[in-house]
Length: 488
Image (cartoon, rainbow, N blue to C red):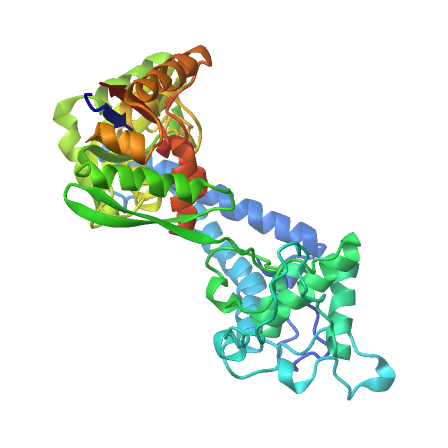
């Protein structure tokens, strides 16, 4: 019996301090510049500043167009320059000095709520709140010791972890202020200097606000300092997801162990069974067909003709080298591969494709696109950039352009599964497997109007791998575009 041939294509808000730091200041303030109320004075200088900036930029661009020397100025331009410096000095004196003083004379993090006049010498936060060590050192991220061995109760589904208990009076005051809304929840880490304690306080405040218990959500055993300013904001715990290993997967003569994070039963087992079938059949071969990440900004013009002019300019091969040099300045790895445009009336969608090395590369692509847009403003000053992404990329959404053109890495893989492997490992026959693939993955998907979904469950495996390796699971939308073809 012949073996089946399978193919697959694919601003922190600071709290009011209890004590003000004395500063020797001149009683004359920047806001005394005009005999007007403070808000009117600010409005006058704000309007003056931005008006003269716009006027000067317009005049200087006009001089560049007419080849007029920039040092040749008219009386109106002299007045505008003087007004610019006047308004700038006022705004710097009104806002800049206070900002610098707030950095130099920043109050200690243990100052939270206004003290009672009769208890001036008391503070609300204890000495341990004013730690001198960094957040990571103040946090004990070691896993708790394992409890003694106990009989396994298979029917138990409720976590034994008790709700977090706030023991100190200072924590209780902070929790009350968070619940009352006087203390922003997002500022706890910067105020306390202890990321784990901030998470515990935020967690308790959330339980009081919602009336729901979070006892089933683990808190201990996680390094909260490691995510500060990096990924998840305002944490209250973490979710445990088991990670399984499928494989070894033999591809192009090399074995790979495939990590998969999932709570779905049988997913890792079925994937592992497929890896076994591939391995016993001599392995699979794969070829990288295309590797290009995309970003597509949306720009608008006053007329459709101007939009068409830019489209023709971008798609002209003679201009590609110049655009590539501008684009490639953003990164050592990002290299522009091509530009594809789509016009809708006065709106133009520009789809940039570039290589990004080993990175997913959305940031480097976006920076390169911004460089090109800034460059195009010289020859197309009437171009209005609506958004750095106009959904023609298309990012994290099912789209025919991704199915046809590809986004990221496009590959083709092939494996010949032996007949006895189909019977012994997959527990079926070659004929039944081929018929199921045709009627389900091909005909059934066509009847459903599938867009890139001519497969059994490629997204299941891709999502589990993304979660296990710390990738963005939302990218699974376009990453799981796949068609499975099989024949005897």
